[in-house]
Length: 294
Image (cartoon, rainbow, N blue to C red):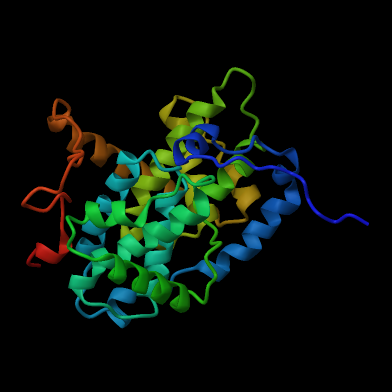
């Protein structure tokens, strides 16, 4: 019997892998049992309440937001998948809820979380390279630092990195809403994804489960397009308290309004991008936590 495999696999460059994208939607993954499994599993990745008061003694929510905004900007600049940033923030919050760090280590932690989330959620070889992430920190960390903290994060998370985020619930919720053929579901999805990413920057939204945040962002996206938010149906699907969902929706809408108001004076300013040849003398990151005096 001949067991030798004669299949030939040609090497694929990182650019070709990125162009190939991801697999198409699978109807099996939209079944009700998948939603039920996610609802049961999400509690395992919940963040302990107020780790700033119980675990972290040097950090503040403002420091977390600074690092979160830097992480989001890196993901946007590299056109990362929408799921990468929220998953990286989930890693960061789970780590901070069990292990105290100093303020000089926070950006290093965020970089390690980005590296892990990119490996898990980017297709093929399109993940964020470690040396590129070091460059985005203006070389304030080393590759050895990053690799060591990658292992540290994995150990503290007990190698359970397939976390549930609000992004995972979006297709499962949207396919069960009576939106009709006249609604552009892709636009609703894009708006909801943006709201989830914006919410991930704010520590206050960690109090909500991923399913609650997903439902609140879907309702906010629908209402922002002048449509019915379908709150009763979303409450039924996620089994969340109606008052809790209303509170989450109100917070999401206030966050979006504040973000639009803050961005209005800077509409003409070009987006920040790092230089392509070499790091500048000053930090390439907009908020280098290691150089900020809190």
